[in-house]
Length: 124
Length: 227
Image (cartoon, rainbow over all chains, first blue to last red; front, top):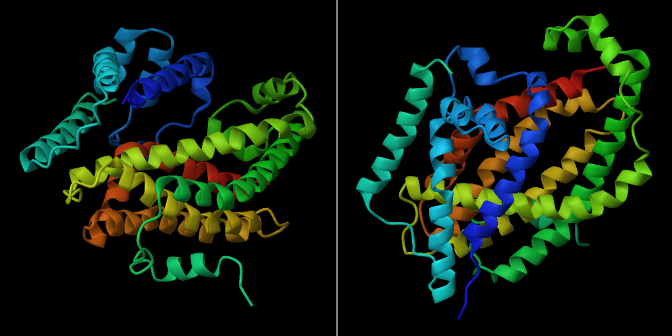
C-alpha cells in the first residue's frame, strides 16, 4: 500500500510560506519586536526566528544562520528528510512512533535549552 | 429543550470527564469539528475584515492616532504621509468570497499545527505511552477544537459596539483556557495524566509562541483599546 508523504507535502507548504515571507521582508521594520525581550531584556527561545525566516525567504542562508542557527540547519537538512519520507511512502511503511527513550527526550530538552542559551549569549 | 452548545459548555466546565466516551474515527472527528467551527470562524473572519477595512479607511482619511506613532517610534508627519499615499482598500464584497476558501484552509492548518506541536510536547513530557500514534493526537485535537469553537462564538461578542474594550481581558483569559483545554483531550486519548496533556500545550506555547503569543496578545490589547 502506497502512503502519503506528509513530511514532503509539509515541507512544500513551508517552502511556499518562506517564499511569501521573503516578499514581506521590506516591511519587517514595522513589526514591534519581541514582547518577551522588551519586558525582560533577555532574548526569548524564538528571538531571531522571524528575521531568520525572512532571510531564508530571500535565499540569504548566511544571514539566516546568523539569526537562528537551528532553523538554517533544519532547512539545510530538509532535503534529506524529504528523501527519507518519499522512500518510506514508496515502500508503504507507516511513520515510526517517536522513541520512548528517556535519554532521547532529555537530549531534546537539552538541545532546546542550548538553542535558547545560544540566542541569549549572542544577544540576539 | 436542547440548548445549543450545552455539551461544549459542560465539557469546558468539567474537562477531566469530557472525553470518557470511546474516541470517534478521524474522519468523523474532523467533520464534526469543521461543521461547528467553520460557520463561527467565517462570521468572525468576516467581522474582522469589515472592521479592518473600516480602520484602514479611517487611517487613510484621518492619519495615524497618537498611540500608533508612539508605538512605532516614528515621526507622526512621516506616518501621516505614508498612510495618505496608501491605495484605497478593496470593497468587502471582493474579499468575502476569498474568506470562503481561506477560512476552512486556515482551520485545517490550525488543527494540523496544534496536533504536530502538541504531539511533540507530549513526547517531550513522556506522555506518549501505550504507543498510540499521531492519529490519536489528530482525533483528540479535532474533538477539543470542536468544543473550543465556543470561544470563537464568545469572541463574536467582542464586535458588539461598546463591548470590545470591556471584553478584551476576559476573552484573552478564555483563549488562554481554551489553549490549555486541548491538553485534557490529549491526555484522555493517549491515556496519560491530565497534567501531562495540559503541560504539553504549555510546552507548545513556550517552544513556538514565546514571541508570537506575546506579540499577538499585545496587538489584541492594542486593537481592543484603540480608538
